[in-house]
Amino acid sequence: MTTDVDRVANYLGQMARMARAMPPAWDGAGCKTLVGGPGMEHIGHMLPGRGLYLDTDLKRLGITKKIPHVYERSFFLHLRDLMHKQYLSVLNSERGAISTYDGIINARATGQYNDIPFTKASVTAVANQWFSIIRAAGQPAAMVFNATTAPTETATDRATVGAFSTALSNPAGSNRKYLLTLGFTSSATVNFILLMDIHVQGGTFRLTVTSAETVASPVTVVRGYGVAVLGAGNCITFVETTASSATAHNLTISYTNQAGTAGQSIVFAAPATAGTIDGIYPVGSSNWFIPLVSGDFGVRAVASTTSNTALGAGAMALILHYPLMLIPGISSNVYVERDSTVQIDALQELANSSQVIGCLGMLCFCNTSSTGQLTGMVRTIEG
Image 1: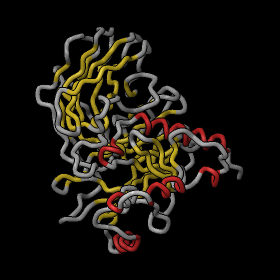
Image 2: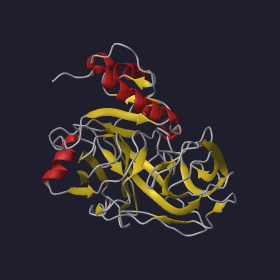
Image 3: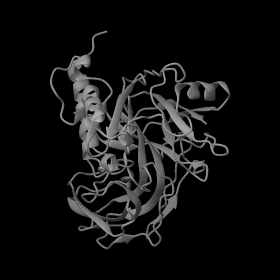
């Protein structure tokens, strides 16, 4: 089989641009998002605010030109050798209670594994835009966003209706839970799948008024992925629950950052493009997240939104989440997954609060007019 080098380079560049545009949680707290290939091979990590760390060199892929914001393995290792030892483990994905490959094998052999399938009905979509499949019918069931006015928020975890992690067990005693692999297939070709841990969901944030849509009691996250920094790496994402009308406007979002500073305010311009139900707001963005104030690299809570123009239609639900794994899409009706005990590449701990793990959800960057019938499996261990 011949590899299309130009297509590979395009995918790498696209992921690097996504990572570069994210809040700088890599510099702030060492946060990173695992990047897997369609065969579940370990590609590297998205380094929020920096770019893509590639766990090989471009020349080994047949790519002869540098790609902006892609950090090759040999270059990174050279830099790492110049750093103090306290930084040497930042990219080591085997962290926590299980720290060796033998630990993975032992956990699987002694029954400490927890593998769950999922399936989601197709969602009507738009090519080259992000969509949520959280509310799609299937297994797990559809999540129900809050729909009050003024908006309210609810903390989410594995017990939340619609969580992909509903069938996962919480870690026992002082154990930790680790994500091994995510495999999927779809009846439609997709560009990317993003697996995330949803901390908070809320709604409804209306775009049809110019007064502030203020949450009376904003919910603060309790699970943390950043090193001793609660909220580090968390992203603000809005899902359209009522399609927005084609009216250009500015939206102001008030939030509490990773340092606990309330009243942080970001203003961004939304284009005069009509939205789609379950589409990620704003329409047309190649990113799934809202930008933050310069210097912020995470979010603990979201307080309000304010549109400077009253749209004819438009309402949104909030998902405050941490991105766990990004996987480039594969051709429709093709499922590929590597065996997690024989060819495991990396571990991603699923953060918990009082031994309760989070609410896993999924976004899809579409290639065509639907997400397709999505079916897959998540593999985990604990220890």
